Image (cartoon, rainbow, N blue to C red; front, side, top):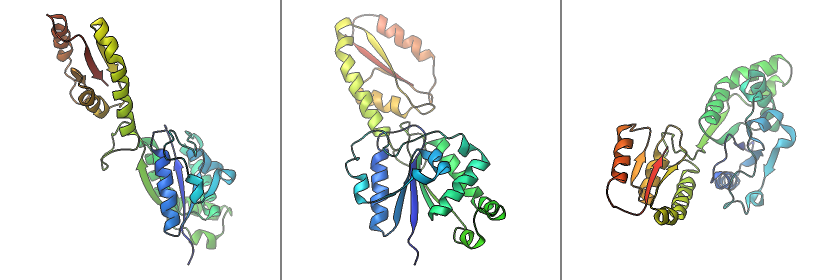
Length: 248
Protein backbone atom coordinates (compact mmCIF):
# COMPACT_ATOMS: atom_id res chain seq x y z
CA UNK A 1 0.00 0.00 0.00
CA UNK A 2 1.39 3.40 -0.98
CA UNK A 3 2.26 5.69 1.91
CA UNK A 4 0.12 8.80 2.08
CA UNK A 5 2.05 12.03 1.53
CA UNK A 6 0.69 15.39 2.58
CA UNK A 7 2.06 18.89 2.22
CA UNK A 8 1.59 21.73 4.68
CA UNK A 9 2.09 25.42 4.00
CA UNK A 10 1.39 28.74 5.65
CA UNK A 11 0.23 31.62 3.50
CA UNK A 12 -0.65 35.30 3.79
CA UNK A 13 -0.09 37.31 6.96
CA UNK A 14 1.48 35.40 9.82
CA UNK A 15 -0.48 34.75 13.00
CA UNK A 16 0.56 33.53 16.41
CA UNK A 17 -0.29 29.84 16.61
CA UNK A 18 0.70 28.92 13.06
CA UNK A 19 3.75 27.06 14.33
CA UNK A 20 1.63 25.13 16.81
CA UNK A 21 -0.65 24.11 13.93
CA UNK A 22 2.32 23.04 11.78
CA UNK A 23 3.66 20.97 14.67
CA UNK A 24 0.30 19.32 15.27
CA UNK A 25 -0.17 18.44 11.60
CA UNK A 26 3.32 17.01 11.16
CA UNK A 27 3.28 14.88 14.28
CA UNK A 28 -0.27 13.66 13.73
CA UNK A 29 0.62 12.66 10.16
CA UNK A 30 3.68 10.77 11.34
CA UNK A 31 1.69 9.06 14.09
CA UNK A 32 -0.85 7.89 11.49
CA UNK A 33 1.86 6.49 9.23
CA UNK A 34 1.82 9.28 6.63
CA UNK A 35 4.72 11.35 5.33
CA UNK A 36 4.61 15.10 5.89
CA UNK A 37 6.29 17.68 3.69
CA UNK A 38 6.61 21.35 4.61
CA UNK A 39 6.26 23.69 1.66
CA UNK A 40 8.42 26.68 2.48
CA UNK A 41 7.45 30.26 1.56
CA UNK A 42 3.75 29.55 1.06
CA UNK A 43 2.24 29.33 -2.42
CA UNK A 44 5.44 30.65 -3.97
CA UNK A 45 7.23 27.58 -2.68
CA UNK A 46 4.49 25.44 -4.20
CA UNK A 47 5.17 27.04 -7.60
CA UNK A 48 8.97 26.88 -7.31
CA UNK A 49 9.10 23.32 -5.93
CA UNK A 50 12.46 21.57 -5.51
CA UNK A 51 14.32 22.86 -2.47
CA UNK A 52 11.14 24.41 -1.08
CA UNK A 53 9.71 20.94 -0.34
CA UNK A 54 11.15 19.57 2.91
CA UNK A 55 10.36 16.14 4.29
CA UNK A 56 9.61 16.52 7.99
CA UNK A 57 10.32 14.21 10.91
CA UNK A 58 9.32 14.32 14.56
CA UNK A 59 12.26 16.53 15.53
CA UNK A 60 11.71 18.96 12.64
CA UNK A 61 8.96 20.66 14.60
CA UNK A 62 10.51 20.46 18.05
CA UNK A 63 10.88 23.71 20.00
CA UNK A 64 8.55 25.79 17.80
CA UNK A 65 5.36 25.62 19.85
CA UNK A 66 5.88 28.96 21.60
CA UNK A 67 7.32 30.88 18.63
CA UNK A 68 5.40 33.59 16.80
CA UNK A 69 5.22 33.91 13.04
CA UNK A 70 5.79 30.80 10.95
CA UNK A 71 9.05 28.87 10.79
CA UNK A 72 8.27 27.54 7.30
CA UNK A 73 7.79 31.02 5.91
CA UNK A 74 4.95 32.79 4.18
CA UNK A 75 4.81 34.79 0.96
CA UNK A 76 2.16 36.27 -1.27
CA UNK A 77 2.58 34.74 -4.71
CA UNK A 78 1.61 36.53 -7.88
CA UNK A 79 2.60 33.45 -9.88
CA UNK A 80 0.04 31.25 -8.11
CA UNK A 81 -2.70 33.69 -9.07
CA UNK A 82 -2.21 32.65 -12.69
CA UNK A 83 -3.30 29.35 -14.21
CA UNK A 84 0.25 28.77 -15.46
CA UNK A 85 1.54 29.10 -11.93
CA UNK A 86 -1.04 26.68 -10.57
CA UNK A 87 -0.20 24.20 -13.33
CA UNK A 88 3.45 24.34 -12.32
CA UNK A 89 2.43 23.83 -8.69
CA UNK A 90 0.39 20.78 -9.70
CA UNK A 91 3.37 19.35 -11.56
CA UNK A 92 5.62 19.85 -8.53
CA UNK A 93 3.14 18.09 -6.26
CA UNK A 94 2.77 15.12 -8.62
CA UNK A 95 6.54 14.77 -8.96
CA UNK A 96 6.86 14.85 -5.17
CA UNK A 97 4.09 12.28 -4.76
CA UNK A 98 1.90 14.63 -2.72
CA UNK A 99 -1.88 14.40 -3.18
CA UNK A 100 -3.07 16.27 -0.10
CA UNK A 101 -2.47 19.80 1.15
CA UNK A 102 -3.10 21.47 4.48
CA UNK A 103 -3.25 25.25 4.09
CA UNK A 104 -2.96 27.58 7.05
CA UNK A 105 -4.03 31.08 6.08
CA UNK A 106 -6.80 33.63 5.79
CA UNK A 107 -9.59 34.30 3.32
CA UNK A 108 -7.40 34.84 0.26
CA UNK A 109 -5.22 31.81 0.98
CA UNK A 110 -8.17 29.47 1.43
CA UNK A 111 -9.93 30.86 -1.64
CA UNK A 112 -6.80 30.13 -3.66
CA UNK A 113 -6.71 26.60 -2.25
CA UNK A 114 -10.30 25.97 -3.30
CA UNK A 115 -9.64 27.23 -6.84
CA UNK A 116 -6.59 24.96 -7.02
CA UNK A 117 -8.68 21.99 -5.91
CA UNK A 118 -11.39 22.71 -8.47
CA UNK A 119 -8.89 23.09 -11.31
CA UNK A 120 -6.82 20.05 -10.37
CA UNK A 121 -8.29 17.53 -12.89
CA UNK A 122 -7.95 19.96 -15.81
CA UNK A 123 -4.42 20.95 -14.72
CA UNK A 124 -3.38 17.31 -14.67
CA UNK A 125 -4.92 16.80 -18.14
CA UNK A 126 -2.93 19.75 -19.49
CA UNK A 127 0.29 18.36 -18.01
CA UNK A 128 -0.35 15.00 -19.70
CA UNK A 129 -1.10 16.61 -23.06
CA UNK A 130 2.07 18.69 -22.90
CA UNK A 131 4.12 15.61 -22.03
CA UNK A 132 5.29 17.04 -18.70
CA UNK A 133 3.95 14.01 -16.82
CA UNK A 134 2.96 10.56 -18.03
CA UNK A 135 -0.58 9.21 -18.22
CA UNK A 136 0.17 6.43 -15.71
CA UNK A 137 1.62 8.95 -13.30
CA UNK A 138 -1.40 11.23 -13.73
CA UNK A 139 -3.79 8.34 -13.02
CA UNK A 140 -2.34 8.08 -9.51
CA UNK A 141 -3.46 11.64 -8.70
CA UNK A 142 -7.03 12.10 -9.93
CA UNK A 143 -7.94 14.47 -7.09
CA UNK A 144 -6.29 16.85 -4.67
CA UNK A 145 -7.46 16.74 -1.06
CA UNK A 146 -7.46 20.11 0.71
CA UNK A 147 -7.82 20.94 4.41
CA UNK A 148 -7.95 24.60 5.42
CA UNK A 149 -6.97 25.91 8.85
CA UNK A 150 -7.96 29.53 9.32
CA UNK A 151 -4.96 31.63 10.34
CA UNK A 152 -6.34 35.10 11.07
CA UNK A 153 -6.27 37.28 14.15
CA UNK A 154 -9.62 38.80 13.12
CA UNK A 155 -11.69 35.72 14.07
CA UNK A 156 -13.87 36.51 11.07
CA UNK A 157 -14.45 33.06 9.59
CA UNK A 158 -17.60 31.02 10.07
CA UNK A 159 -17.46 27.37 10.99
CA UNK A 160 -14.76 27.69 13.64
CA UNK A 161 -15.01 28.93 17.23
CA UNK A 162 -11.58 30.58 17.26
CA UNK A 163 -9.26 31.28 14.34
CA UNK A 164 -5.52 30.77 14.74
CA UNK A 165 -4.00 33.94 16.20
CA UNK A 166 -7.18 35.58 17.57
CA UNK A 167 -6.59 34.63 21.21
CA UNK A 168 -3.00 35.88 21.15
CA UNK A 169 -4.09 39.16 19.56
CA UNK A 170 -6.68 39.66 22.30
CA UNK A 171 -4.01 38.98 24.89
CA UNK A 172 -1.76 41.67 23.37
CA UNK A 173 -4.64 44.17 23.42
CA UNK A 174 -5.23 43.65 27.13
CA UNK A 175 -1.50 44.03 27.82
CA UNK A 176 -1.35 47.30 25.89
CA UNK A 177 -4.42 48.78 27.59
CA UNK A 178 -3.15 47.75 31.05
CA UNK A 179 0.11 49.56 30.27
CA UNK A 180 -1.53 52.87 29.33
CA UNK A 181 -4.11 53.00 32.13
CA UNK A 182 -1.72 54.58 34.61
CA UNK A 183 -0.86 57.34 32.12
CA UNK A 184 -4.53 57.96 31.40
CA UNK A 185 -5.26 58.26 35.13
CA UNK A 186 -2.26 60.53 35.75
CA UNK A 187 -3.43 63.05 33.13
CA UNK A 188 -7.19 62.52 33.57
CA UNK A 189 -7.57 61.66 29.93
CA UNK A 190 -9.54 59.26 27.79
CA UNK A 191 -7.48 57.11 25.47
CA UNK A 192 -8.83 55.68 22.24
CA UNK A 193 -7.33 52.28 21.40
CA UNK A 194 -7.72 51.23 17.76
CA UNK A 195 -7.41 47.51 17.13
CA UNK A 196 -7.33 45.34 14.03
CA UNK A 197 -10.18 43.21 12.74
CA UNK A 198 -11.11 44.58 9.32
CA UNK A 199 -14.90 44.09 9.11
CA UNK A 200 -15.24 42.00 12.25
CA UNK A 201 -15.58 43.65 15.66
CA UNK A 202 -14.56 40.60 17.69
CA UNK A 203 -11.21 41.96 18.93
CA UNK A 204 -12.65 45.39 19.73
CA UNK A 205 -15.63 43.95 21.60
CA UNK A 206 -13.75 41.25 23.52
CA UNK A 207 -10.91 43.67 24.21
CA UNK A 208 -13.39 46.16 25.65
CA UNK A 209 -14.87 43.51 27.93
CA UNK A 210 -11.48 42.22 29.04
CA UNK A 211 -10.10 45.69 29.77
CA UNK A 212 -13.22 47.23 31.26
CA UNK A 213 -13.40 49.89 28.55
CA UNK A 214 -16.04 52.58 28.87
CA UNK A 215 -17.05 52.58 25.20
CA UNK A 216 -16.62 50.32 22.19
CA UNK A 217 -17.22 51.02 18.50
CA UNK A 218 -17.55 48.12 16.08
CA UNK A 219 -18.69 47.86 12.44
CA UNK A 220 -21.56 45.58 13.40
CA UNK A 221 -23.17 48.51 15.26
CA UNK A 222 -22.13 51.72 13.42
CA UNK A 223 -24.07 54.27 15.47
CA UNK A 224 -22.17 57.51 15.06
CA UNK A 225 -24.40 59.42 17.49
CA UNK A 226 -22.72 57.52 20.28
CA UNK A 227 -19.50 59.43 19.65
CA UNK A 228 -21.17 62.75 20.47
CA UNK A 229 -22.80 61.32 23.58
CA UNK A 230 -19.52 59.81 24.71
CA UNK A 231 -17.72 63.16 24.36
CA UNK A 232 -20.52 64.98 26.19
CA UNK A 233 -20.45 62.56 29.12
CA UNK A 234 -16.68 62.67 29.40
CA UNK A 235 -16.68 66.47 29.39
CA UNK A 236 -19.54 66.99 31.84
CA UNK A 237 -18.83 66.85 35.52
CA UNK A 238 -16.40 64.84 37.63
CA UNK A 239 -16.01 61.13 37.08
CA UNK A 240 -13.26 58.54 36.83
CA UNK A 241 -9.74 59.86 36.34
CA UNK A 242 -9.34 57.79 33.17
CA UNK A 243 -11.37 56.35 30.34
CA UNK A 244 -10.73 53.81 27.61
CA UNK A 245 -12.42 53.48 24.24
CA UNK A 246 -11.75 50.53 21.95
CA UNK A 247 -12.52 50.93 18.28
CA UNK A 248 -12.06 49.00 15.07
